[in-house]
Length: 282
Length: 270
Image 1 (cartoon, rainbow over the protein chains, first blue to last red):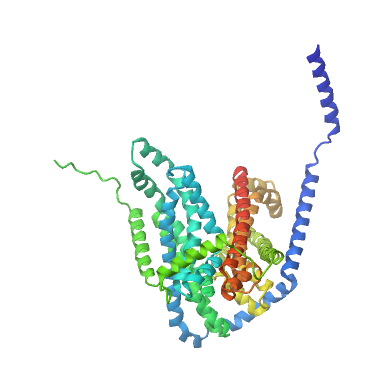
Image 2 (cartoon, chains in turn cyan, purple):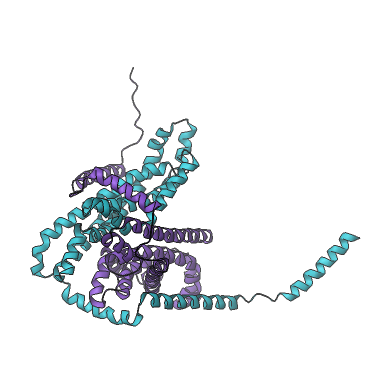
């Protein structure tokens, strides 16, 4: 008799509970959530504006004024063309430093990613260490790396190279681990089943299947790094960033505009070339 | 007796292009090495000093020119700058992305917007901030507007691509049943892509934090980046640089963990 009584009691309890819970008001909840979300954002906006002394209205007001001013004063004049050889020389330096930093860090990152990818890692601990190194390198902004290497390497292109190298290495470690994980699993398994050694597996299965993807990442990073190199150059007094800084601080705006224009041209050219290369290798 | 070798891989047009590209990289890298002038520094000694500096930074961080309250406040300023940039950038990008997405807007307008974004993105953020500082003065306004350019460009691309991934059948069915453009956007497009949009926006917030640190150091935008610049270029105090780097590093780590969670939630839903 006891189990039956229990069941009856449970049923009764269930009924009273069902009566106690009203049906969910989904639209009301959604509205409330939206309202709370909006309130939170408004509070954050107000707090940020107060903390940073940001004035929305002055931002709106200054925007058209600044654009008009730019149109009048930042246009490279015929006079500023005399600076072109110097700009070209420094831009070339910046582009080459960016490319070298990207490719060398890609080689190291690929070697490291083999120790961390699920398909090729020797053991889980090494994998974790490599992943941690990537996160560490990536989480320190490139500006901080530049300030750090300024201590030991001084104002030289090598400082910029190292700062970009570190940042890119961190980014590539994560990207390459994911690429190796995604693209090479089945071929690695097949080779391993046939008794191939680790080195053979890497050179015959992993490398051919991931190289197009890696090249795509490298092209992307070269483009990004030319912009980073401008920033690093400003901080370390080298390359195109330094040239801009000189014209900017001495208020020679037309040549400064010419610097901006030449960066735009070079970056766009590299982007177009990258897209062509991507299409032809895939 | 020699056996004839069977070629393992047939050379194709794309493998030829790949070899060409890889050779190109090699040549450019070797040429680039000649640009790596170390000026007066002796590379061997400098490397040893860099390693020693890294050790001091990581294991002996100190605060000398600021206290905890100031450090946290400055970190808050940097976070505030990145929040404002992300917020205003996201609003503008969302508005524009309705016109840029191929399945919602006009193809011609979309192409114009994409070309415009390509040019805007080609200019480094630091130059945008410095250019706007002439008009608006060094400070938060120039930083937010300057950093906003890349934010809008990035989010515009991310948002419009998210919209383009929507099943075209849904939009067609709504169109067939007589729904207006606004109804399609608010009842189908936005609810379906909300998690993806939020996740992209947060990733951009993460990037903007790093950018805001850099703008503090290079363009006088204030915040923790400016302290970093002072510690390095004025006080020459590697241990204080270490402390500030730790602060930035830990903040970035927390944000990356949140971003990874968001991306996973996004993958489960999508």
